[in-house]
Image 1 (cartoon, rainbow over the protein chains, first blue to last red):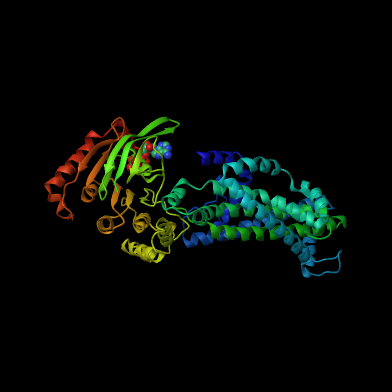
Image 2 (cartoon, each protein chain N blue to C red):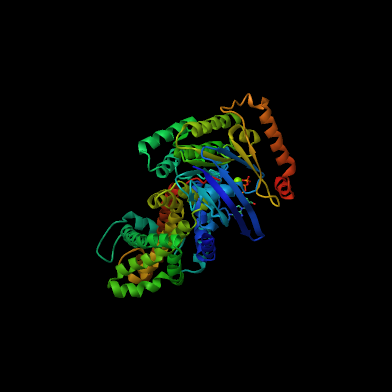
Length: 317
Length: 268
Ligand SMILES: Nc1ncnc2c1ncn2[C@@H]1O[C@H](COP(=O)(O)OP(=O)(O)OP(=O)(O)O)[C@@H](O)[C@H]1O
Ligand SMILES: [Mg+2]
């Protein structure tokens, strides 16, 4: 009945596809980051732990070795390609130059010689701080609204058109508005992150709340769970996994967007650092920064993967 | 507490068309009665139980419990679902205790915890009480669902094949507990139990409702089991009344009520 309609309209959202793409590696993480992406396992928007077949220890060890070797090979390939392109395009830094720039940057990551000379660690911390503030503010909005949308048809009808309209807009388009209202570039960058982080969390929360199976609801009805108890013992635990999935996607996008936002806002942050290095024609620093941004992104995703595994319960079929 | 089911009709509308599942069900169950429902797969046993439980509304007719029309689920009825319906994020213990606590606000919570412990122990789950449903066997899940319903001690206990997934010994043990609950505890007066087991139905019930697939009426026959209680499982097969009922049930289920639909389902 109503759930089904809601679900169908959800499936129709292009956003589900975004979700699925980001979800695949998450299913991987639950297998200790070793399993190859299993098709579109996350297509339903709810990653579920698939009971992994235990392979003998020797086979597992062998495949772990394979993974290290192949992963290493992938990087070798990347560096080879990069070296080849750098050879024909002399403006590009070579891998070796970039590595040495990286080691220079990491030699004194937290040095602070005034506004124009801050260590890369400080820049990353500044960006992370902005991401966390914007992300936290987004949760305050996205989770309650997501709950309301998932739980009530009226709330769904009221919010969904607005969400659908705003969701595809590049968050950077909000930057000027943030700047005018907040009158400070760093605050505007945080505002951009706030907007960015809302949508995946909101939609995944709504999806989780809307898709509580009839059998769980029946338990609550037959045993007369109070509203509070239903929320605490059915709604929340059931929708937590998809909520955290949404948060994980939000965080991933926020970390991508902060770089661009700081290129606009200037002053501090890793995005500013990249832009500043470009202006100083120090492309080796740009390459080094790309690497570090990637590392931080992996760490953030890993942390949310852990959180996801924590809230994930084992489904009973 | 008498339970009256009057002219209940329920049709499911699916893509493949309308399916009249309950085709005018009339049943009157006395307070204190133990009734078994038996019938082929898909004949509407679970649907009937859900209507009585108030989880599904009837298209026509009504269910009246002690003079009050059933409009939804109530604390006077607890269900053991066919698919167990445990909450997968809660431990076995919490599944039982939380349900019992909220279904029985009239009891002191310590009393409820004691009762929950009693049934968790007697269903052999006490040592596994901290495990999640995903970490126990199918039979243990079924026992958890049984313990949960028993711990509620409702006036009317609705059981949907509660012992289907259990080994013979555990089943026998739980059947005895069900009888104890029903005959000794003040709370649980009336039991309505869906089963596929002919012997189980005769051993437990005062009356057996035999349900049928279309085009037969939903309730094909009601058989009284006039065998003295307490019934002795070992002696039962020698009882002529038992033999008569068993023969009749086998005939109904294996001959008379076999429809093209049942055949198709058995084959599937
Ligand atoms: N929600 C529903 N929507 C559509 N059809 C349904 C629904 N619930 C049950 N049915 C159909 O109604 C019929 C009766 O279902 P029901 O679950 O009551 O059978 P049952 O007698 O309990 O069978 P079993 O012994 O296999 O449990 C079946 O054919 C089933 O497909
Ligand atoms: Mg059934």
